[in-house]
Length: 490
Image 1 (cartoon, helix red, strand yellow):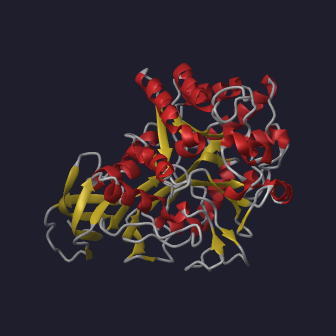
Image 2: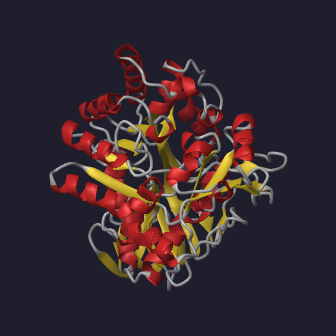
Image 3: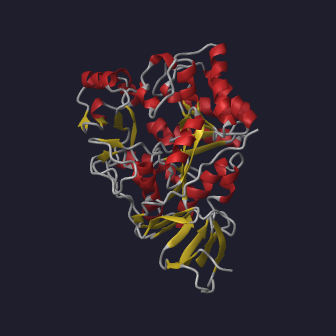
């Protein structure tokens, strides 16, 4: 047969079958049509990838960088599918319509958003425009405990977005930590009925906030055990902080008892959010173990000098991007904690990629290279290359395991409810031609906290649905082959 493209002489890795061998990969349309040694040269276009790994493209279950620019940064990090599942969107039709009309370089999708539904139904906030959640992150009205009738309205709104194909339910519980635990259980029961996962930013642990109604880790595992829902623990590292080992123990206990709990983490010691977040209230910092000077207010680049300045910023710009250090990446003990998720079997890689902020005029959304005044958390551009580097070259895992954590495991979280995922995260005949080609000896993040938009090193080619979006390390500026993904729920 004739192929649209043949990638020749690469080290082909399929994390599902265990394939790890020199092979050619033939692509027809959007599909991998053959993986074999020595595909005959019949004149089909080909690219020699000798000395490089070819693998299924990385799947990011936790990305808020849904713009063209943000997705290009992620593509340069080997990502071929980026989904916003922790926060989600509402109304979903508007989010999908915007992405479809603009085009996207990589595949995308959204969960039904508990927080946005709560903002609308309980807080009376209009869900119009972008960054609605960040703009209203500090509004107390949507964060308060709600009665049964109000909770029913929130659940109805979530159901409406699930009916529109929402990929599970995203729950930002850490931003409204004083709600009745019964509401979270109601969300989990709904997810179990609809056959979709719940993606949770948990409320704080009892060690960090003993006055909250329930420990965040125990709440998530209890929901999994009592409702049968698939509960996905978002960025288990940043919400667990220095109590990560205890939290993993709780997850392992629930899993051993038969509950379905999956985990993700990003390999950094700093988080990012709107500075108006509940947990960044000056009154809360001591008990979560950070100081005001651990917080960087990104629009000015300043380390927040004291509680008064923090209160001022929270009042004047609650949605302003703040990066907060919860571990010291240079301290050996903290670094060991940062690496613990990578050492823990089953924890997948997810970026929590943040939207780009512009410290000057906002450029054309299709502009590339990005202007120098674009900033974000370095995890947006570097999470997956950094994870592969740390797993293979620092921790000694085989590259096959790194690829499994970045592709197959995320696909398996969703494949029961998102049919399209059954052809992603694999490299075999019939799988989607979402592929990354990288040099295993070179792959590394280049983004830093000071230069956050540098694209990763060692990523040579990225294909999405059979089309190059990155070729020879360069973004293809007119390539928008990304497709929307939807759940097919009960």
